[in-house]
Image 1 (tube, rainbow over the protein chains, first blue to last red):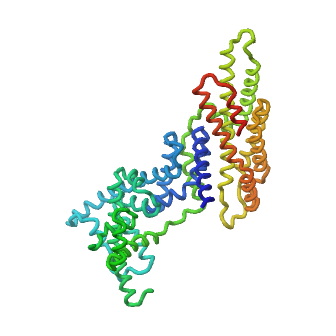
Image 2 (image 1 turned 135 degrees about the horizontal axis):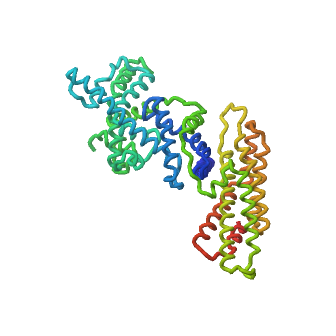
Image 3 (image 1 turned 45 degrees about the vertical axis):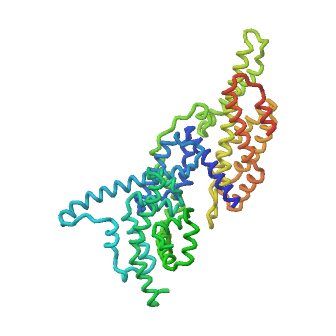
Length: 215
Length: 265
């Protein structure tokens, strides 16, 4: 434990030195920061966007924005956390933009087909394949990916930050530009929707277990 | 207690303190709520099962290549601009000039014709401040090289580790380091001499290493850096210099107490 905290301190000091050198006009010093934090930011970006191409774009944009705003970086904060937040902010904007584009594309089709607008929760339920089709972890992953796509950008951001990256509710609230109580509710709503989407799968597994066809 | 709601179970799982003991007691007794909590857990287990494709070990380097051409040059502060590695040759000449001015200034005394006590003290103050900033900058660059080497972790199976960039930077820093050590020696700053002396040995170790080293050689470099505790010493002296610089900004009349403080370190 001691070695890892010393290592973390070393990284933080290394980051602070690199930031200082970059601000002094040494552009190559920024490379240290990019190389050190890209993987971590990529994991966040992929979980938020759900695809590689968008994730890579988010990572690049996050580091470009961080470079432009480097003067604002207090120096006493952790650069990794700072660039993570910039990436989360950019990713949520991107998700919102994508959702609104999707809605614009969907709207004429729905009107043409005479469909009424539906609640996202019931969409998750309706789009669910039958229990027979859901078996095994590959299907589970595919189902979860699909369920994540039905979340609103704020819900997706909240669950990614909370579950995978262990961010505090206060930090999530900052990115969502809301208060802690609202942020907590957003995480809960996301979990509720995901649970509902996975319900047929869980039931299928339960049935399979009962029938002795799955260990 | 009636059955817990989904929200209450979620709050319990999140570690909420409110009603925690009552909920724990209820869960021990109630199979239905236990099953409900287990169903909630399945959601998190399913999230964990979602893979993130590995972007590859060289991902950071690829990101850098993609963004580097789009990064605008940052305007450096004048004194920092003198010390970026690409301008080391110029910086070396400048450092000599600053040092020469520094020692020349020491010879200017209150008895010299045409000079007042105030003017001499003020000129010396400016020169000392320039020197403090320059040495602080040199230590910052040295620290960066050492931190990068100390934190690097070769991946398993990696046969050679490329440290050519750090090696070149260490070579340049050795030259600068000698200049500052000599200056510290002449001004009787023993604490600074000792730190720069140890720093020089570590920098020489790195500068004399091949551009590509085996994991064993790399491990030995890291151990030598750690054993000498040089990073801590460099940080302490840098902090002292920062304090001295701040003190000089806020106190117009400064004695040579800064040198004495550093000697203590």
